[in-house]
Image 1 (cartoon, helix red, strand yellow):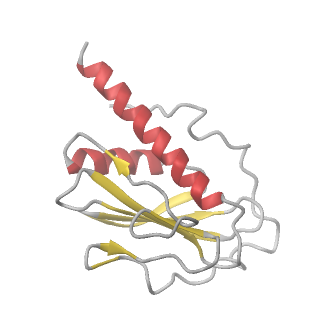
Image 2 (cartoon, helix red, strand yellow):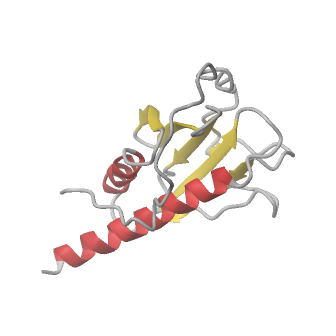
Length: 164
């Protein structure tokens, strides 16, 4: 199956390189609260640079991604989508969890995005947070919403091709 993500789902300006001399300066190290603990992703700090779909307050809440296929198919779809998100690479993959890092276009800030597939639900719980700074200007929320749109579009295209 070839992956075709609609332009509006991942529409971003053409990528530019990190400004010379800044590569890695704002990357920081991976936080120690990454991962699933007791079936839950970490909560967000008070800063506005994080969103999470599990147990969040109103400012940090984002809905999980629902799916109707089996977990392995949903997981592969998400992997395919993450493969075309600009400046994003998958760092860790497990049957029920994916960790990806995304780097900002100009300054090289690194954000961590986590995706958790609970065994008893047909949803992908998600969390995205900036490693540094107070505000991310809504970048993490927009990235996860773009991934949600791409996931829905891919599911619709798959369903349409299966009915032909």
